[in-house]
Image 1 (tube, rainbow, N blue to C red):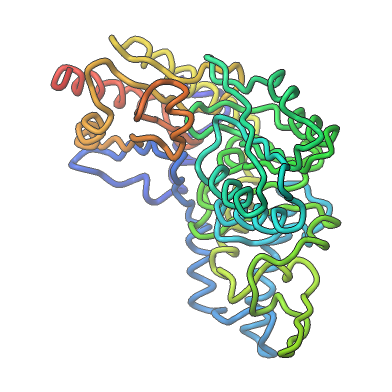
Image 2 (tube, rainbow, N blue to C red):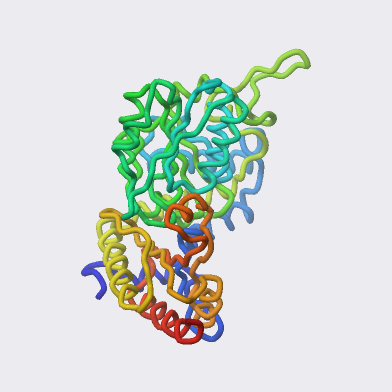
Length: 409
């Protein structure tokens, strides 16, 4: 059932962790929405940095610092090219999407939010795109409005339009749901936000590994990208912001290379992107992310997308055959994530049984408690697939679920 021209086994061979056994069975890793595995060239790039080039960036007048700075800034250029930013100055390295959204919420909140203003979120946001805005709103005296999700797991964009008023200052929306797999029409959301005079913030944590991320086509003001969810290392991500906005926002953290000059009376701040990168950055992480981006861009994008679509179809078809299994999220456009519950089987009991089959899935509320409430559940099971997964692995998942259902239901 492999897609013509797409050699998934050759791709898998590039990911060392996929070759291992768990409990005496071949690993079936289906927890990619939590984090993805890393190809050899990402591991080698980080190893090479620590073995040969280890030094701080932008500060040393010696060869190692020059090499480290070159690698770090090359990664920024790679990130800018990946999301089609106008300039690498629009790409701020962060510790991940959560950090990026906290940065935007803090700086935009300080500069733009006032008492009575509104921030519009969606019902399918994960906590990292809810809590920072709640904190910003509490500081400013602003309020949060929520775009509802339909029964099929799509944003109600008519409701979104009605909720955008002259008081709406920010619209923050996820590009791809980490639970439902839904690919949102974020370009339309951003267009509506712009028409309402609001800033748009896109959480692309799940988007980077599965869909094209083109900030100019989307028309967003800010976008947050995760490193470890797109085959890069943990602890690094990218915040994109339109340059004219970043230039006037107050810095998020102080110290390190984000300063221009310091006295006890006053500090002036550096130009972009250093303005928002306080302290010693995650240099190895950024270099690893750059390697991950170059790895992804070298792939056959059409082949990857066709393979992922085939995986999703196979997973939904096979799981639907299981008695008492309900799938959450049936959007017309979605990535290969299948979230489900089974009558009589608690997700927390299911996961350990699957683990004995070598199958890794995620269970719980997936950091989306409002979305769980929307669908009337407290926890679900989630199989999230990546381009290196196979149809045979889905069959192992189904075999494990059937075993668990006979044991537990």
